[in-house]
Amino acid sequence: MKTLLHLVVSLVLLQLSATAQSKKLKVFILAGQSNMEGHARVETFDYIGDDPATAPLLEQMRGPDGKAAVADDVWISYLTGHHEGKANGEGTGKLTTGYGARGSNPTKDGGKIGPEFTFGLTMDTTLEEPVLIIKTAWGGRSLNTQFRPPSAGPYEFSEAQIAKMLKQGKDIEAEKAKKAEESGRFYNYMVDHVKSVLADPERVCPDYDPAAGYEIVGFVWFQGFNDLVDGNTYPTGADGKTRDYSNYSKWMADFIRDVRKDLKAPRLPFVIGVLGVGGVNANEGTIAFRKAMAAPASMPEFKGNVMAVETAPFWPDELAAIDMKRAKVKQMGHLLKVKNKNSPNKDGTMDKAAQEEYLKQFEAELISPEEATMWARGASNAGYHYMGCAKTFALMGKAFAEANLQMLGAQSRE
Image 1 (cartoon, rainbow, N blue to C red):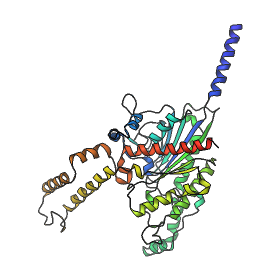
Image 2: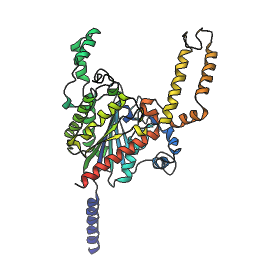
Image 3: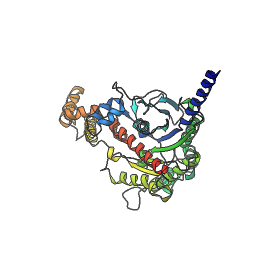
Image 4: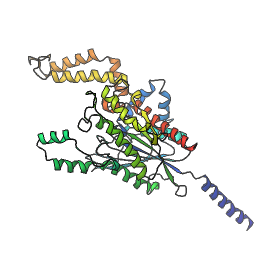
């Protein structure tokens, strides 16, 4: 009897000890458009190791067997899709590669990474608690319309926009109705998905302990390209040169407030990933947009709980230079097919074989073998997707995580 009693007591103590050691699930939300999806193919991982400064990061991204790392205590739910959201699908599992941009089936590994990979790996090595990443991202979506936050109110067409539509013979009321239907749709998809996942965290994260619960401790926003190039919503400013992006700052602040309200997380640390396409030497218009993106982080109400992380320093300048040469080759390919005064085939005497040989020689003179090798190792997409360079996305994800951790650390010391 005594032995049985001791056994029962021991089991109770073990249970109490396990309960005491239970750790609250840390939830991070990542949202945005195509660069949050991530278009860096895993085949470009080796390029990270070519730079001694980032070689240690590559080691973190791979396991002892040389294959892609799988996080020990990080799980992910990833909602994405195509056709204006009608084909949304969810991918779930332990964090590893493949949770970047996906193809026609959003539930399947797309062979790519976005910022989520090194973001999660950084959290895995830093935090003692289990981590859940909820990622929602769709390409080609703007803050001014599809991600428009509720507090921003309805999208208002300017007089110039209305005049332009009238000139095009469009029905103004029909256009307004269409815009109203689009406005905020993806903001709602995002919030609804987060709430759906958190209604049953164990579905995605098998190690979730209901007794310990969860807390939302970070939000990363990485978006911007569609707003950058939207000349209708953001007309040229008073200087007559650059567009006025001040409304983006206003809507970004609304977005932060609304997310915190809708998710009942009033002190939620918020990271704004500032669009870095074009690098540190981008044109004036891009620089102006970046300032508008980052502006909310300087607002008094967001001091210490919103951080803007510049991604321009991670822009792969060396690959961008090669990409410009590739664009010239592509342009020459088009020129060879037309009777243009600037075309080497202006008299139309070159047959297809001659055109191909000319273009091959043109490319060889423009792009060295070393540059061709570098491109093959480091790039897998277009410039607006940071050349699909895994090195760039890895550095961005790590930077986003470090900014989030910095804010969490500051909150813990309050």
